[in-house]
Length: 219
Image 1 (tube, rainbow, N blue to C red):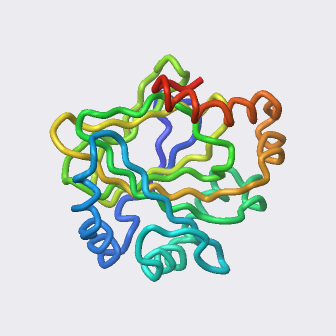
Image 2: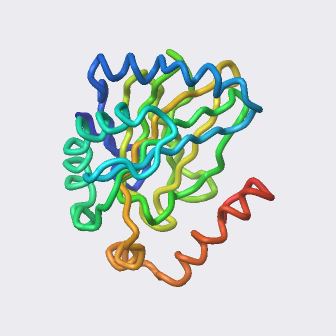
Image 3: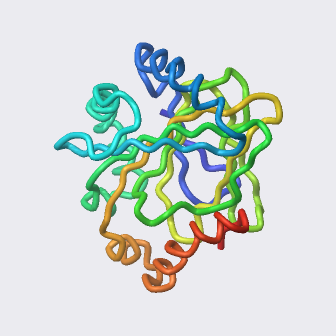
């Protein structure tokens, strides 16, 4: 596993060939993508949630999601232990979201929601596209790009108003990625660990979806 610390002030973990060959081939060639790509342009997100007791929510084959959880959960937990060990005890469930970003779309700079203990993305397809872009502030200072390479995973542990990042299409091809998050419902505990204001952070978390829906910005 490779670790980078360029211009940004927080830790990013890069893991090439994160998925085994069989799982990567299956996930990057899912027939469902053909139908999903036919939908209107923009950013399409398809959530699947699972915990150690089984599926909570799934839009894809449940056996596939359970296999991903079983195969890679310990690997993700070990990464969280390295990046932010204080949050490991808050883990409750995992979210596997397939995100298809239209070639001309861009998601604004954001720092991730407090229910995400570990934020990860695995680049699936195509062979070339735009990677994840990290910054030191919401204005986009000290831009650091973790380049696109199929089956490369990029992980970090979010921190309120610090772990700024964005993603976008490359103007040529749709961007297909698997977002892998370790999650919790213990939001107050998250803000205590981060030493951040719970009231303000929680309010911002609740308002942002509405603000993005109507104005395509985040606060």
